[in-house]
Image (cartoon, rainbow, N blue to C red; front, side, top):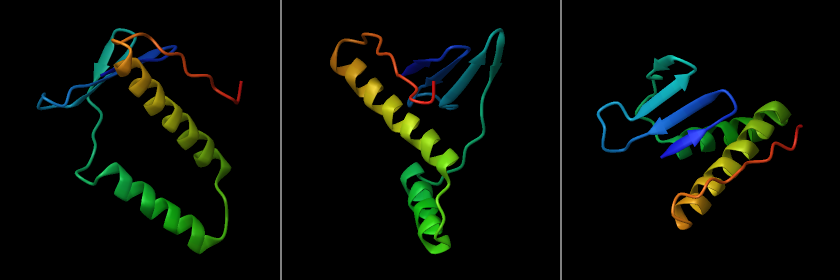
Length: 91
């Protein structure tokens, strides 16, 4: 899966040894990530917010954008790889 941003590109290849590739202009990097499942991490963050009784709106906005990105990737996959724009509600 390839996700194109305004200035960066992220490539996820589930079959590769290094699954995530980040392209920033001419620079290529392989971001580190742990073995913890993303949903586990998100559930732990949600529980922390509930326990603290506070709302982290910056994180919430970022996570809403992530859900929109996943939905766009799914729509693209259903439509033979057609590009799908993701609108940022903050702009």
